[in-house]
Length: 405
Ligand code: CA
Image (cartoon, rainbow, N blue to C red):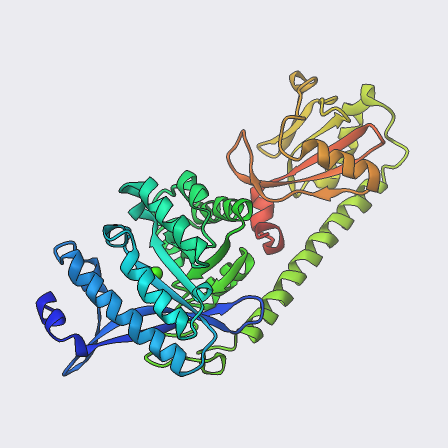
């Protein structure tokens, strides 16, 4: 497609709208505006036109502007109260200090389209050019009520610091990157992004959702909004909740069911482990006899554990490490006196056990020594001593309810 053809035939440009669905009510709350060009053999995406660095910015701005006006006309005409997500290239936007863009929006505000319903999507890799100017411009837009979304978050190494400064309302996470990463790596990226979102009060939108598994992932990892072919393709019409490809509520019901089943299996596992240890009630004497006590514990966790030890209430190890090597348990007395209170959640976990008199199962995490994904079952032997049973990856991987959290 020749860019000049497009500019000369502006009447062949048309907007399409891809629905964005809310996790809260399972309904369509907005649309991302995308562009199409009408050709004799059908419509073509304007993606290549916008992404081509050879195409002058003025051309892109002109087409963007036209699409925006057509889209706003359509939303007004149909009395839609949905959000409109608009893509803008940062450089293009900054060229005229964003005045043309703002002028158009203010015009439409007069006609009844509040600026609070505009979500401006800025791509993360645009941050490289003149970030301070962009930041100021976006701050200015925010004073008008315009919402800011950062697009394609996580696709490259994320500019956490810059996203913090921008304080966008929405982070758009590109699910297609999950297809190029190891599942663990992707999960870690998502974990840090959701921490960031939590801290700055941003909502997560997962886009490019293409199957049920990805929808489940998005639901499970704090997705406030969903977008993707699995739910709806971009369409010239403003698709309503009824015309989505799937019934989101039904799928979420199934996710909730699955999740509750896994939680209850984890609780049952914790209860079974507690019961095993209750058989040893009365055998625990004092830290001086900690190793002797662990000898009694070993056969109870033969199948699942590779390391067992005891700490006191200050997080100091009072027993040897008992480690299973080539199928048999070896004591490592040199570990007595190690301090573990510096580790995340360690003290909180112990104090909760002390109050509740119940065992606890940790989240899944990478063991510092082996690098393998493990969990720890911990149990209060008394008010001052706590048993730690590290569960092997082998055992975890055989049980879905332990492998996923
Ligand atoms: Ca976008």
